[in-house]
Length: 75
Image (cartoon, rainbow, N blue to C red):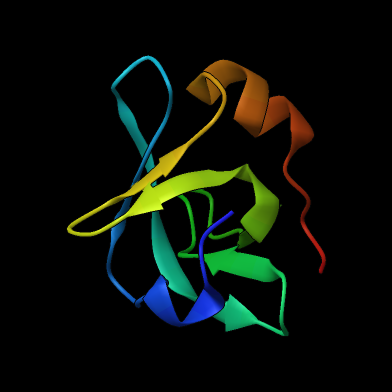
């Protein structure tokens, strides 16, 4: 798992199959990432534990379809 300080607003979130599926809004607490609103105007949240690497983008450990089934709409 990466350090929460590596998560920056505006970073693209890239799933394990290489596609971008979200953009970071900000860290919510110590272990939850709040994502920018989707086209429907809904924020989603994902655990920091999903992130495998950070830099110019956050890479997560699962395909986007799976991540979207498992993310939350509340922290």
